[in-house]
Structure formats: structure tokens, C-alpha cells
Length: 401
Image (cartoon, rainbow, N blue to C red; front, side):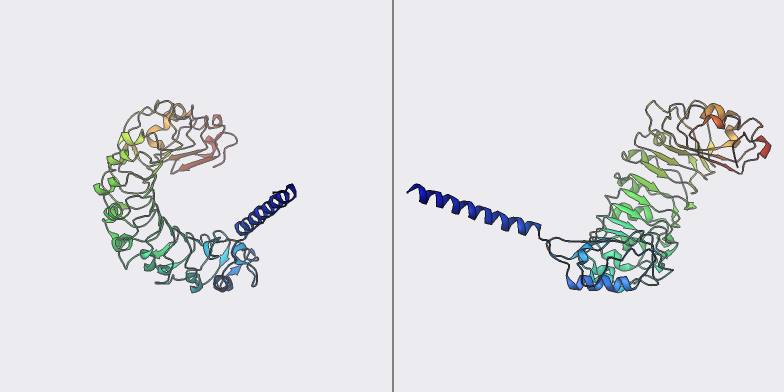
């Protein structure tokens, strides 16, 4: 082959390679546009909202809905896979059924928008079989919890917290939870599930074995915590606050939850001695036992390096001397105590707690000089004196009550 022909062949090969690279790059960088039916459903949803802060201004007919605020599409199909309108300050009087046309959704959040005590549709959610994360917290919905959610078998996160007028009656809690075996996070704060009776802990143990976050504040549960609950060893957060009909002893098996970071059982009716082993768990950052007058607590001497940040014992009964117990709690930011039992020792108890931001003192009569040491807590930003007998002339300079 002559040098000229060989040169031409090299040039031709180079052009072919460059052309192929350009085609591949073009394919890689070209995203599929939003499906017209998806855009149409979103625009119907938009029409149902009063958009106070113009958060949905980008939702315009004729534009690619995959670039709209709060919308994420699958790059290959162009279908909407995430709709996150959380905190958009939207208002509506109903949940528009067009939302159930977005059948490829994996994430749906309408959290912190005002639906003005509208009722949720009984059916419709089952049309979203791919949903993994569902967040309707603080949305002011009213009435029966939607049964269609019970059929969303892929759910990992379910958050309907702070909807004080929602309740779950039909189906019952056991039937509702039966198919949600992949659930990792369950937040139903203030949703009335009182019809579950005392079986709620058994239901959770049987239905959601991989649960990591459980928040059931003010849900109307009753009875003691069943031993089967001990199977939920992946739990990192347990919030059962203000369930006044929860009774019995605090289970010692909580100590087996090696990843537990937050334990809040305040405002319940647990009784007896709180297990000291739980208090010493290395993983715990928050322990709130407050407003539990039938619960006795004996604090151990915490070891050096303890990372506890919140310890609230206000309204409990201290059953031992705690003057030296808190010395090593260098990370403690929030402390609550019943002053009726420790009022004369408070300065000794807290003087080393240099990181303290919040201090709650519950009940009891304070001596004239008892608050003179408050000024030494230089990081303190919040002081709560609950049912404490103190006159204003006893307060140190600069402290307002």
C-alpha cells in the first residue's frame, strides 16, 4: 500500500472513531422529556393549590415538567419518580386524584402544607405501587387513615405525623401493617391508633422486622410492651411519648438494641425501677423519662467519654444520690430534674456541665441562693421552672422567668 493510500485510510478510521464517539456522547447527554400525561396530571394538581409563595411558578404548560420545582423524572422513561413539595406552603381543601396518575412515583412528600381538615381518599394510594418514601406529615388531614396505603408493599418510610385529626379504625392496626414488611421508618405521631389496644407491640414485631425508627407520640396505645418487641433490634429511635395508657415496667431488653440513639417514653404510665443498664448504653444520645411519677431512676456514675446529650428526669422519682453521677457528661446539652429531691444539691450536680444549653427544674421549693450559680452556665439559653416555688427577688441578675 502506497504511503498516500495508507494516510487516507488512517484519516478515514479517525473520522469513524470520532463520529462514533460523538453519537455515543449525544445519546448519553440527551435526557428523555417528560411524558405529556405526567405534565397534565401535575398541572391539574397545581390548579388545586393556593400557591402562597409562588413555589410552583416553574410549572408551566408547554415546558418540560422534569425541570419543574420539586419534580424528578427517570432519565430513561421520562416518567415522574419523585414529587417533593414538602414545606412549599401550599393550601388546598382536597387531595386532587390526578396525583394517583403518577404511577412511577418512588418518593412523594406533601409535608407541611395545609389541607384544612380535608379527608384523604380511602382508595387511590394503591395505584402507586413503586412508592418507597411517603411523607404527609403536618398536612392537617382529617378522618380515617387511607386503607390503600396498606397495599404499598415497597414502603420503607411512612410519615403521617402531626395530623391530630387522623385515626385508624378500619382496617385495624394489625391488618394495616401486615404487608409493610420492608418498612424502616414509621412516624404516626398524633394519629389515633387506640383501636390497636395492647397488641401494637406484637403487631410491629411480627410485621416490620427491619424497623429502625419508631415514632408513635400521642397515639392512644395501651398496655405493657410485649416481649416479642425485643425482636426489633435494628431500632435507632423509640418515641412513645404521651401515651398515658402505656403501663408496666420498662423492658430490660431495650439494652439489646445496640444502635438505639433516642429513647423517649415521657408522659407514659410506666412504673417500677428503670433499668440502669439502659442508661449506660454507649449508643444513646437522648433519654427522656420525664412526667413519669411512678418511675424510679437511679443514675450510675457515667464513665469518661459518655456521649449523652439529653437526660430528662423531670417528674420522675430519683432513688439514689446523684451528686457525682453527672460529672463525666461533658456532651450534655439538656438536663431535666425534679428539684424536690435535689434542690439543695443542684449546684454540685451541674457545676461541671459546661455544655448545658437547656435546664428544666420540676417542682419543689428553692432556697434563696439556689439559683445563684446559674450565671456560671455560660452556654445556657433556656431555663424552665415547672411548678417550682420561687419568688422573683430570688432570681440572679440577668435571669428572666
